[in-house]
Image 1: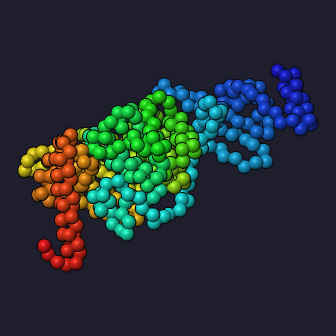
Image 2: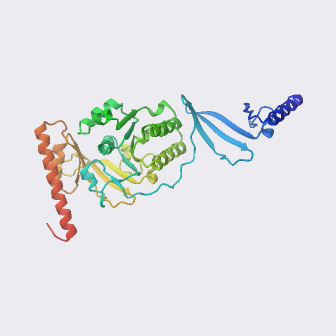
Length: 378
């Protein structure tokens, strides 16, 4: 052993005299970074690579133990190896230095835009939007409407679907007058469908990095965010989502996330993923039961919208073959229209008549609001 250690010292000294940058690999033993206990003393830089398996998911990690004469991070970073080589993803977030902007973008639903007050209502450009609710309440529909509105402005949009195949998503959205196909052909919309369990959290984040660099979208939809819950520990999921949000904000991308809430806790607005504090605009959709008719309807309200005045009252969310519409809860006429609109698949004449009734009802509500603001009664 003594002769081997001596020869190692001679080798390292010879490499330094020749001014050769050398990379030497070794295997650690227990808590010792090197096999012979000498290399880490005479080396200028030590990089430790690790591969751990947690709940059948393997994650590679890298950490710089020491680097003489240079500042370096001592944190442990996940890295992945793919067809393009080795990619290291920082475990820390990008920071909170993103600039603010007064610009707004439409929600894609005119009646929903009116719930945001200001010169130009809608979401703040470059902000994060979360729609949480139980299954079947219309979260994906709200996200799809936002995506299509962005495409109509000529902006590229990325839709990451973790539960529905792209073909099924296109077909389902067409039933509520949201058509993806024309924008896909124009190259404005890209739909990526994959199972969260197909690979680990870090690979999901790396793929998002690459997609944003290649496609350069202005809007990103991730549906649903809660599908990532089973792919790691709670702190790992939160760390990954925080870095994802920082990535989107640093690129000025308006992002829309959906979050599935358990039906046993549908009145709990905290959500399942625990990232509501990182969200700029938070929307809750839920199922409601009318006292009179005992019919179930969808309800929507805005929990918060940073920097934007908004209507926090519960509104009826109506999905029909003419599109998506919102109506006040206290309007008797809107209840009748809502019940009729729930039958998707009417003929064209019935759809046009229903659309005209909805528009007339919205105009009546606007006149009432204007009169109240001026101090008049109706």
